[in-house]
Image (cartoon, rainbow, N blue to C red; front, side, top):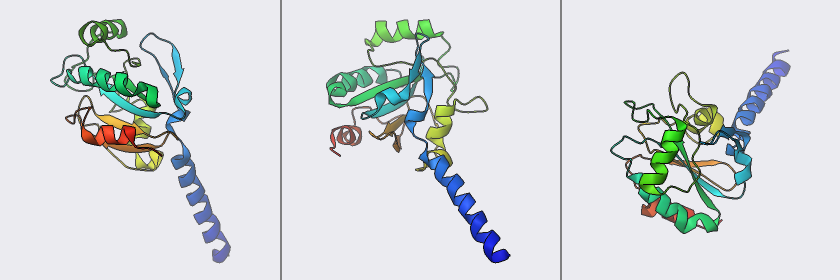
Length: 182
């Protein structure tokens, strides 16, 4: 009996583990900063940089570099998506419309910005649960350490790596990843 049950139980555990790791970035739906539904599956075939942003942070000037990188590589199957979050010292207190206006007026942001959400804690958004949990993304566990942490997603919707908030969006590592051919 043990010879039958153990392999069967092991098979169920492996199948469950595989299901969790088979979820991709494309399985999520988010809300744009304008309040519209945005299915991330629309980005299939593109490399994506996901960044949690804030308007009142010492790293806020990274918006300028994010926009520069976006404009330079957007025609090469690359996109940046900003996710405003107020998880660190209340550095993103504004409403979605205030955030949109701030980004546009101060940094000329044209890359897609999503509605404000939580990137950590008990109210963490499901996308950020996936981004930070190896059990869900199949790659690594990571903590969101501050505003402007970057996650790189490949053309298949798989998590590739996370980049420190302090690393600039136009770093050699990031540009190398964007321009690397499959």
